[in-house]
Length: 217
Image 1 (cartoon, one colour):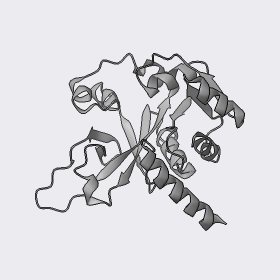
Image 2 (image 1 turned 45 degrees about the horizontal axis):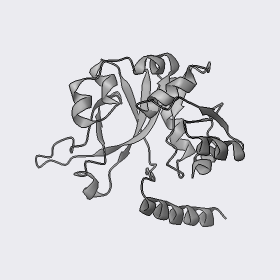
Image 3 (image 1 turned 135 degrees about the horizontal axis):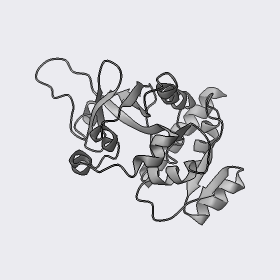
């Protein structure tokens, strides 16, 4: 699974280097086995963002992308789209993705994080609740895709930002940026996030991956 993520990340137009960050020697050995650049990090990091920041502190890249290792069908075009959220706007410190919700069941699902953005494309709020609230008018709902792009200097200082009440209430780390007054550019994508968190997820993604291979052949 990790190798598929790595291979797809290497197909992007804009990434110049792909590094796997882990604190697990088994993952380290597997990643080295398929030829990836891999870094062992501290084990006590409270979040993946902190782990990425540790690796970024030793790199000179101006922009750093945090790609989750449990999405083997990640679309390289979606990664590139998120990157352009920063390259096109020099004042934006952070960017991410959103996808229009097509399954109505996801609107009320607290495990599907929703996002609303303003006319510029900047995030207004992220929530596990349905946003916007529907009062009879037609409403569009977007789910947040958990891929993040950071300016390196902003990423290195992110863990030092105060944790606010909204982040604590929603358990959503990206709210820390908004609560501290930073803009997050949200780029729309057609990519349907398919993370692997359970054995059932793995079976579902494996079946979809086989279908995608057949369509390409």
